[in-house]
Image (cartoon, rainbow over the protein chains, first blue to last red):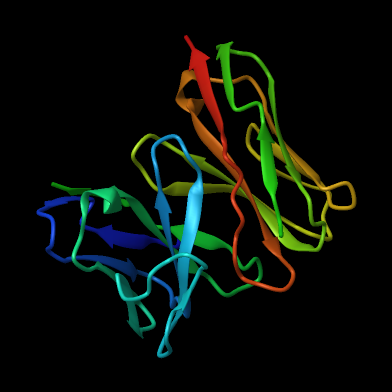
Length: 116
Length: 112
C-alpha cells in the first residue's frame, strides 16, 4: 500500500535553532502534501497545503516565514521550523494526497518536536 | 465553515462489545468522508473512506455509514478487542477543496 515516510520521528532542539522535517512518498507520487500540527489530546490542525513546484498555501494564523514548506519533487516535502521557541513544541504530521479512484490520504508517522 | 463533532469524546468498554462512534458535520457539501485511527504518539491510519454517493463501507469488523444530507457518519466496530484501543477521527473532505477537516476524535479503550 501507499506509504509516507516521515523523519525524524522525534527531535529536541534549543530555542532559536531551526529544525527540518521531511516527508517522502515511497511508492506513489504526491502532487499535494498537507502539514498538520497536533497538541496533546487535541485534533489535527491544518497548517498548510503544498503543491509540487509551487508555493505553499498557509492557513489563517500560521506564520509562513516561521514554518517554511518546500515541495520540490513529487515524492518529497519538507517543513522547516525556523527560530524555534518552546511554544512550537508539538506533534507535526504530514499527509499526502493519492490521486486515484478513491483520492485517499496517506499520513506520515509524525514528528514530536520539543524545543528547550 | 465546516465544523466536525465527534461523540462520545471518550469511551471505555469491556472486550467483545459492539460499538458505535458518531461523527456530525455542519456543511453537507462534502466530496467524501474518511475514518482514521491514531495510536498514541503516532500518525494516522486510514480505516474506511466513503464517497459522497455511497451509504456505507465495510472492512472486516468495521462498518462506516454516511448520511450526507443530515451531516452524519457512524463507525460501527463489531466484537471489540483490546487492540482496537486508539483514538478514532473522522474527516470529511469538502467538495470545493482537497482539505480534510478533522473532528476532535473519540478515545476508545477496550478492556480485556
